[in-house]
Image (spheres, rainbow, N blue to C red):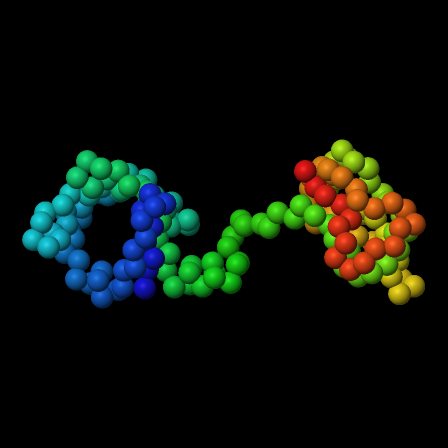
Length: 158
């Protein structure tokens, strides 16, 4: 089963059986003649990106952007493993209740991924809270020496 998306607005499901029934002939490089429901259609592939499975297709003088996803692509999306996707973390929350021992950043500071933001003492252990991404510190919601509950907002990113 293929999921076809046209111009990011219309979606269609097409099975391999549907494809087998398609009467299509390549008349020249990237030029096709299609017989569909006893109607003749001329189509051209103007641009293709095989890795992204994206195509620009011209059908009867109308141009369409077409994305094709097979079963594996659909499973990858359902599981959240798409290539190039990232989750934007904008808030740092306390992973456990504890005491803020040290704050290593200031508001407006530019930080890199894995930079130490603060140290949270919990159960007599020092836990270094690091930056999940590159960004700018919008606000710091805690002070050194403050106790915090689990899921308390500590730092916000811009």
